[in-house]
Amino acid sequence: MVEVARLPAGCTTDDIVEANERDGGVIVDGWLAPGLLQRFNAELEPWLGAHAGTDSGSDASDEFLGRRTRRLQGLCAKAPSFVEIMLDERLLGFAEAVVGPISPTLILNDGEVIDIGPGESAQPFHRDDDAWNFAHPPAPMIVNTIAALVDITPEMGGTLVVPGSHRWEPGRQPAPHEVAACSLPAGSVLFFRGDTLHAGGANRTPDRWRRALSTGYCCGWLRPVENSYTNIPPEVARTLPRRAQELLGYALYDASAVGGGYLGYHDMGDPMRLFDD
Image 1 (cartoon, rainbow, N blue to C red):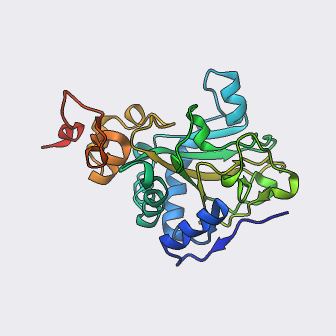
Image 2 (tube, helix red, strand yellow):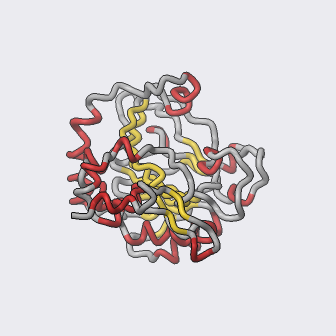
């Protein structure tokens, strides 16, 4: 069985980008500081306790997302420490380096806690880029990260990754020996491209939950997986740092410098004016 390469906590953005270009993904150990990790987990507790599992209204969606998996979005409004994670400079630098060739700006694709419960089955292998069903450009439209909020083992549902699959032809499925089952100590983060095959693993334990944070960024011209406008309404977004407001999609998309146009007008102006005092 193959393994995903690992980097130390002090690695640079360039190190992360290089490993992703080579393998499609990389694990950075000790990314989240212990204090931030503890604070974020404490903020999540009252919210996760209210969620029994996925209920999207679609059987196909619920099957994919996991019927024994608790998912939590709208984190900027529920767990203030998420803003600090979302604005991490190396994380954003990684996203800009990978997505930058096809988009001058980024927006948050999703900030989602994924708590895989005992008895949950494994997901099918998929690419996050395939959420958008059209011919894909030469660079990934999205990057994603999976941060371990507890110690995660393969038996708990550790993420399954197929190193090198970002160079495969569409339709190819991995053989068992091509799949890496990730072990992530709490605070470690898996960085991967939107064109890398991966899946949530099966939780084969009787009583342990695999709690992780998915933070992804996509091209500024895409509709994200998470609807941040309803999850983080203007009255909440107003209290956030300006960069966070931009990443939530409240800024006008401007591609004029690369021959494109503008997207996301509010009354034919920049939505950021909503936050002007």
